[in-house]
Image (cartoon, rainbow, N blue to C red; front, side, top):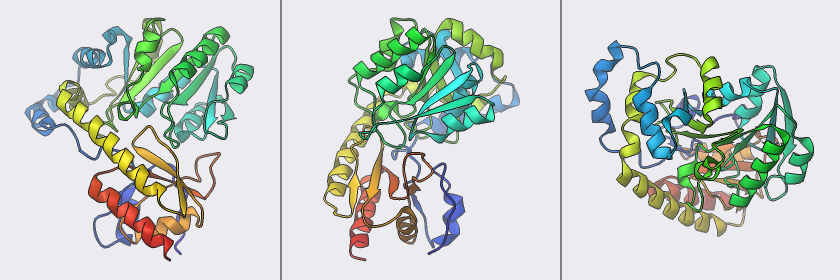
Length: 355
């Protein structure tokens, strides 16, 4: 069995391309299988000449478009070259970073790179936030970074959990950074932006991104809602022109594509139910419930390296999860894709059980 390095991010198809004679189906990156909104390519081509000029350094029209989509004022909107740049920028503004593990590795890594103290707490056995531990740990000047839904578990905070966490953050004079890059894939029982709008986003920011739901990882467009005071602090440290002209153009187009948005939500919800049902029939794995477009899987009879290599031979690239602190080599993560691809994944698991 060939040895591969640990995986810290999905989507690295080029590393494994020469190991399979054919097109690899990428289950390691969690991108909308329907692709970008119809008409976007034409819109980008029609605006290709804008590459001859700098983008608007204040991104006035882009922020207006995002504000209308998120239902917040454009003055509350901050931008980044992907969600990771926004995470990086916010972490710069605080003394200590508090994270719950397992979670997206860049929360901890950005803190370490910026020379911040990083305090690591752990999710409980049900992969939920330990409120008591948070209350005992959080201090003035901390930034608490939480994925909602969590990556890799796929679980979303309940409405009352967000309000409880936010109450602790305000009491402690800390700051809450909610990374909701997968927001649109979840059920619409609440919207964090609507929840925190009543407090004018005091001591909080909510990140969203074009990468996952709008199937535009190459565009690198992240955006967030925060208080007007915090947005002013953010602007003091952000890089100028971090959003290129094509991303600016895309961001002024995609949020108006209501049919695409609704169609994607219905499609992913249907495929999520289908894939969870099919995976639950298998004896060699435990597929965890998810509220996003990916599924965390516990391997009962194999380790991640064996399954990774087995699937790669079949042209399927999965995400090994031992790089997530708190998970071991018996966990993998798979994206929810189109029905044909999802069936190939299920069939591969069935064949694996007979090996």
